[in-house]
Amino acid sequence: MFLFDGPEDAAVTYAFAHGAGGAMDTPFMTTVARALGARGIRVVRFEFPYMAARRTGGKRGAPDRQPVLLATWRDVVEKLGNRERLFIGGKSMGGRMATMVADELGVRGLVCFGYPFHPPGQPAKVRTAHLETLATPMLVLQGERDPFGNREDVATYLLSPSIEVEWLRDGDHSLKPRASAGITEKENLALAVANAEAFMARIALLND
Image (cartoon, rainbow, N blue to C red; front, top):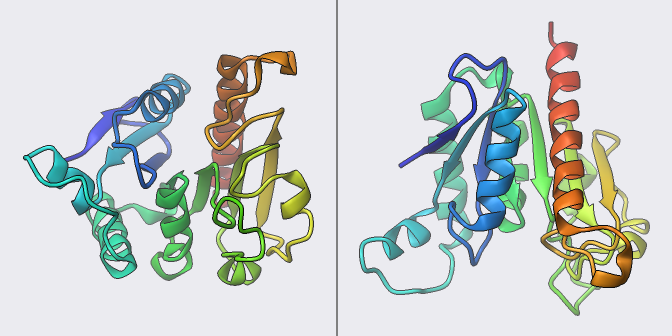
């Protein structure tokens, strides 16, 4: 099942995958999808099998194994078609899985919200090997104090020149700042959406 936001005749489409613990219609996913849709991006949300099973009475188990997650991404891209105008990505795990098939599938670009560079509290266990050679243009929208990879952590990584990172002030893994930060969650999300829309528009134009 797909959830759609934005105009059907949009110039670009963004397939937006959920994270490990939240479904495709969580407040974060819905806020971002609707905001991008309002900016003229066609946003397509979907769920990995383990999350979809919960809607029909399935157990609240762990995420599917990586081969299943990657196969789901391949199936979604195949169904959506028009890969030259298709961006993929998502929240946390959903975005990470997208980065692992983007070059193979030949999509136009990647947009990831809260990328899990390493498990929380385990900065030595980096998940960046495939990002060193990534060819697909990628935008990461990351909170400055994200426990999965903060500004200081990411500064030490060797990342492909195709990857851009935009930092959201004092944001956590969902880009939410502390009350003392002088900026609100709503403002951080609005800035992240604006950056995502600008990135997709710029990268799409490179192909025209």
